[in-house]
Image: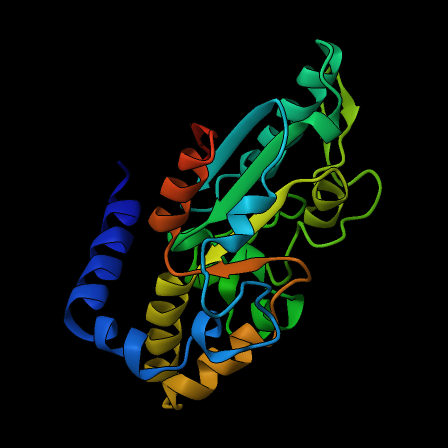
Length: 227
């Protein structure tokens, strides 16, 4: 594990244990507060996972920015299953965005306002500099190309069109909005409300990423670590 990655994880766990855990209960959660950005029924947080269908099922566990891999691997799974006789509609794919991978669940405006590229050490695949936008939100044709394969459709919207399900960790959102609020001397509840109001369409908020990984496996998904 790299030094900066180790430090980031220690900071996250420390904040979760010391100060942010209480915030998880003090700040209204979209899972239980009726927020329109969550599709999950208030009385059944497991309901979203009942949508997982298909002969072949997999969950990609994304814990940090990892170049294009958290989005390329779901596409590879679909492509290679199609080549071996199982079309997209018969595959179940879940991507869990947790820990340092949560910024990919949000619109460009938050990347700019909160400097997500620097905050989460997320580089833009095109510029190789800290990202000031969500590179995987509606990318342009030709943005992503793989040697020997060519252009690949790995935008979140493109993967969703192929049936891939995305969710994001509420525990991590709570921690990082509290950290961001502290740095900017803002109200944590207001910052969290702002972030949740900027979720990309179709991304489900779940109680925690590890909870979601477990639920997906209970629904028959094989596990794949995606960074």
